[in-house]
Amino acid sequence: HDKEQHEKLLSLSETSGSALYADYILREKRCWSDVLYDFDAIRLPDASTLLQLLPPLRPRHFSIASSAPSTSTTKVELCVAVVEGKTPLGEKPYEGLCSSYLANCKRGDVVRLWFKPGSFLKLPMKTLSTNNHQYETPILCIGAGTGIAPLRSLILERERKRPPKNGNDDNKINDATLIFGCRKKNTDYYYQNEWENIASLSVFTAFSRDQWHKVYVQQILKQQKDMILNHLLTKKGAIYIAGGAKMARAVKDELLELLTSVSEEKEAMKFLKQLQKQGKYAVEAWS
Image (cartoon, rainbow, N blue to C red; front, side):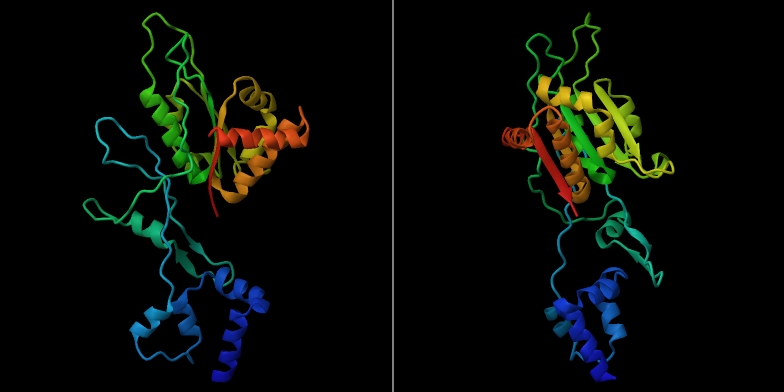
């Protein structure tokens, strides 16, 4: 029995056993306590020995979802999806460590945190000389799920610092566009009411599970090809992308494809790199 468990543990730890590791650990979301339970031949002298062997928990990074209000700089907002579900094979319940911790916090609880710079460092704030209520550089925000968090902070920051309109100026301002994707409109369309009340913002949505065929943000880009190219090439706008790494790669590929339709592929890649250097193309993505 001990020898059998010993051999299986060795297989799990070797690169040749990566498929076994994926099935046993990753897919079924087993942690070290599950392993100790399943492999009861493992013997440890005491808990301190176990703690010395275990790697430290990795920090969880969350993007701030709010601007810095002028009245108070001590309040920040987060947009966190609570991770919970059942494993595919054993149907064992699981939950996210940090997201569940935050969800169970009560008013007055102390949460230890720190701040670090994000990916969006150069938000264009210069207004037009002919109309100081409108920003010179329009922004296009593309995100999915809780990726909306840093995009919301950008949009709200520009709205907070936007100079007031002249009393007799009735011209409609439109210097921000949001392309947002999520599974279902009724449950995952974060901050919907806010977007509807920002006059300068145009919104396009992709709800992937609300119809039989899935719709993602990159498909909205394709549908809005003329608007995207006008934003980039004519208006010299900025682009900010936030969400899962897979989505971010798909969005970049689609942007390159749109640009390649009016130029050479090499020129399209050079154009995006130049935007990035100027701080007008930035990605905040996680896996």
